[in-house]
Length: 124
Image (tube, rainbow, N blue to C red; front, side, top):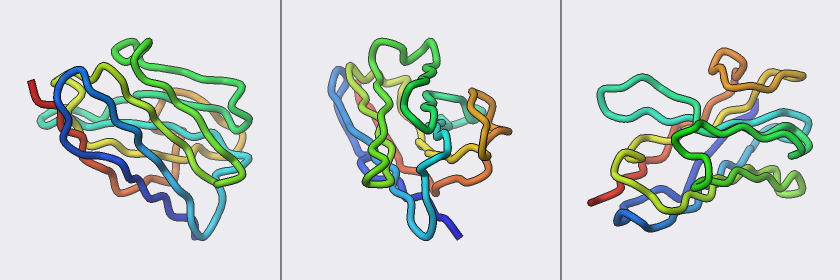
């Protein structure tokens, strides 16, 4: 059974950068769209970015557009989220997810495999 493992979270000052990775084991991310979501304290989970299986299609939430970059390396079975110009309001647990085969979009309902999350904390 496929498992997704996120890494790269941590504590960073406002204006700094982090790069999150999401590696698949026991299965594949190839041929599947993937996404990053986040949940801030006291808030609902929200979509951050999504990428199609080929990398040719990409979505971003308006709140991160121009600052975050999603990418994938299918040879490494890994999806990345480069986060630049971080703000305190980016503080959250970040989750990667694999979409159901043939689907791609912003809705969490399209994703059926989730990682355990990695904490990102941005200090002011």
